Length: 101
Image (cartoon, rainbow, N blue to C red; front, side, top):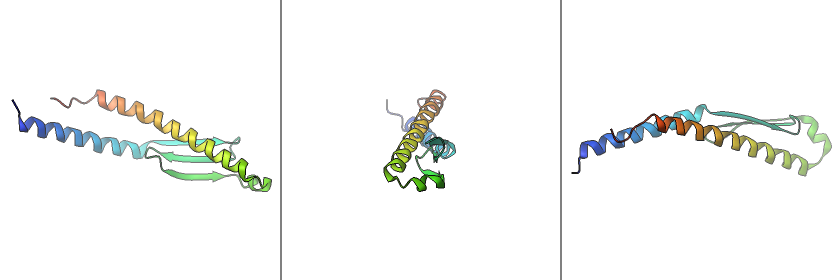
């Protein structure tokens, strides 16, 4: 039989789970570099780039394509690191909650 109290409790747990995940995402940090450290990207768990460090020597080469390739590689690496970390965190969090109790 339908129990609205159980449904409300389940929805409350789901909402708390969502809030907890969002809080955890803000704490996840990834730092990646490419070109032997010429480019460094700092990204959070919301896939926002928080900081970019570029070695000024890269501009002396006047090779835009090289800079683009380094940026792309660095962003992709950082994104993959965040994805891996998030999957692990969400699995752990999901294992510790019982929505049906």
